[in-house]
Each structure stands twice: as structure tokens, then as C-alpha cells.
Image (cartoon, rainbow, N blue to C red; front, side, top):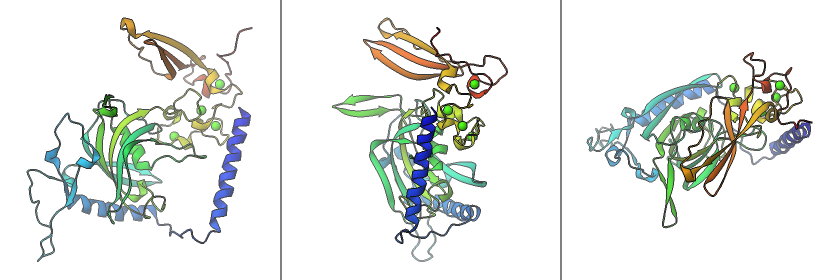
Length: 353
Ligand SMILES: [Ca+2]
Ligand SMILES: [Ca+2]
Ligand SMILES: [Ca+2]
Ligand SMILES: [Ca+2]
């Protein structure tokens, strides 16, 4: 276990060394770092302006149908050539102004209050992702100002909403905030070899730069407000350190930030720490393991897992599903789980001698 920490530490040092080298590279543009609060005020004004002057083809969408992101068309209101003012909508019956259709949401991020906007076409009928999970999506990302489509995935792509802080980056903050508010598909059918997902979440998010790439230029301009049309097809619970506790559960203070929860204060936050309380017994061994078999041939139903019990793996042979779970234990009933309590170090996986 310790050796894994040292490997992680080594990787971290390596990344710092590699990124320091880049500083000498004169081709890297020097981006002026702006104040987040001031930037957000300007961004929110321009987003409101955009939403007030653009409409979408609302009458195209029927309830209970699945649509692709290309079906959703956003258009700017026509402008009177003489006055330069925006005209009313050409066909109000078939369109809806975005400002009248979006949900207004708020969040605090880097001590700044942010507003962001979501157009919900289809909520979806399957599972909702947690903010640390993996998702399979189709999407298109566009900059509000330039109109530049900087990224699009018409073929489903599997993405991590949360990176591991070492060698993988998660998605932008807006995705962590918006996608958990939708549900993935209920499943898929094969139609002539083509996978067709059913009843998936479909919407559009309008994102200030502070919840996007901010000063970063990874895939677009600095300080760009972004529009993402997205289809949430599938979701998968992520356990970054593989210790049996899903990463979203390792956000102990429920602030949607897994980097600030570090029970043993060893600078490895719990979601990337195999021994969360640092008592020498790995977290996975401080959990109770259970195995369930479900024979679907005789219509057996899957167990409903209680609070504090999580699936870690499953397999299927001839219609018999084997599900392995772990369960949080609080052996001294003090409200603190064994894996988070340093003075309790019982290994439930140790062979009895
Ligand atoms: Ca947290
Ligand atoms: Ca730790
Ligand atoms: Ca952990
Ligand atoms: Ca313990």
C-alpha cells in the first residue's frame, strides 16, 4: 500500500517537473489571469443577453421521444435593418426564446457565486451520475461569442467527470454540476448492428467561463462562455482508488469537492487513498464483503442494497448473476465507520488461523 503512495507521489513530482519545463517554452501564450468575480459579472451579462436574443425550435420536440443533439437548433432573432433592434420572433408558435425556457441554477466555486443555465428537453429515465462518476455521452461544445464549435462527439464517448488529481483530468465544473441533474438511458436495443439508446437525458447547458475552461486554452479561447448540447447515454459509478467506497461517498463533507477530504491528513484525499484513516489496515479490508447470486432463469430479483453497501463487481454465467458488495462497518457504534477511525483496525478479510 505504502509503495503505491510513493508511486503516486513520484508521478506527481514527475508531472510538476514536466510542466516546469514548459514554462521556458516561448510558444506558450501568456494569458492574463483575471479576477473570477469580475469575470463572472461580465460573463453573466453576456449569457443573459444571448438567452434573451436567441430561440430554439421547441415545437419540434414531442414528449416521450428520443432526440439527437443535432435536432436542437438555436437561432438568433432577426434584426431590423433600419433600427438595428431585434425584431420579435418570426414564428412564436413554433419557437421559444431561450430565456423563457431555461432553468436558472447557482453554485459557489472558488468563492464566487455563479449562475448557469440549463435547457431540459428530456430528463431521462435511467440512473443519474454522481459528480465523480464516468459518463457516456454525445455532445457538441460551442463558444458563445465566436460561435466556434470547438468540440463535438457524434459517436458516444466515455468521460470521467472527476480526474484523479495526478495524471487524469476530469471534465469542466459545469458538467459535474449539470449531468447529475439528468438521468441516463434505461438501456439500448440493437437495430441492424446499431446501438440505439432509449429514454436518455437530453439538454443544453449555458456555462460562464468560470465553470468552463476559464483562463485555460485547452480546447477553446480563454474566458469563453460555452454552450454544450448533450445526450447522457450511460453512467458508471467510479471508485478512483478501488478501495470499495465509491468516490462520491469519499466526499465526506458533501461539498461536491473530493480534493478537500483527507481523514489521515497524509495529503492524499480519501478518494485516492487506499487507507483512509492511516491505521495500517486498508479501507477495503475494513469493510464487510457480501456475495449475492441471482438466478434470472427462475425470475429471481436483484437485492436492493441498503445504505452503506456498494457493489464492487458482478459477473453472469447462464443467467445466474453473481454480485459482490462491500458494506461499511461501525463496530463500536460511535457513528464513525471503521475505515475512517484510526483506533479501530479490524481486518475483515484476514483468513482466520
Ligand atoms: Ca469535500
Ligand atoms: Ca489521506
Ligand atoms: Ca479511499
Ligand atoms: Ca480504522
